[in-house]
Image (cartoon, rainbow, N blue to C red; front, side, top):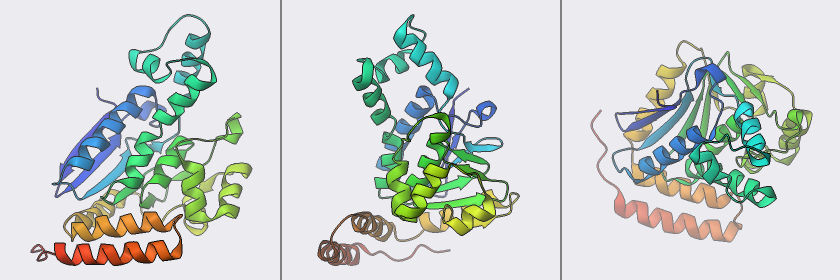
Length: 264
């Protein structure tokens, strides 16, 4: 059974992390499948929006700690890892681990950088690297049973997947430090108030309402979304004047690319 389910309808790519028995914890093979699917989506001109979610009761509970333990034991003794795991951790030691962690940020970078709007549809537990993936998306919609936890410092880790950067950009440095250093659990209502999610839906309608918004985006003016996202990304760390220049260029480009609106 594939650890990632991909479907495309009405210009929307729905990616479902499919390890429900682990609340969709990320192992090397799931990282690889997600990365490859996002590369394909980025290049597919028929897709105008991406939705990321999880199967079962969780969005993504973070990294698979059992897989990490097995990898670490393999690095220090017998090799119990899969070919993908051996490749990802090639080199050993600090540099090998750093290479592996950087490899695992590719999915986050694609979700953030691709010209198509990306939405995290958070249907349950969202923690650790899963929280980083949610932060990488442009929008985050959650069901009322969703729960959020940074998790990293609670298990003696500092954090990866770009989360420290994403959440500092989204929340500001004070709230990002609160999120990571206090390591408190947020229910859906508190997450909305804190700024972790954009919208909260009843669990029974989360999928329907998220996909309706994604379909509206996919059916809209795609060059405008792509250029708007490009400028918004630049605004995260660019100077005011440089962003004004990007806005002006984007407006000129999108005006040239405008097309009649698709019929409803």
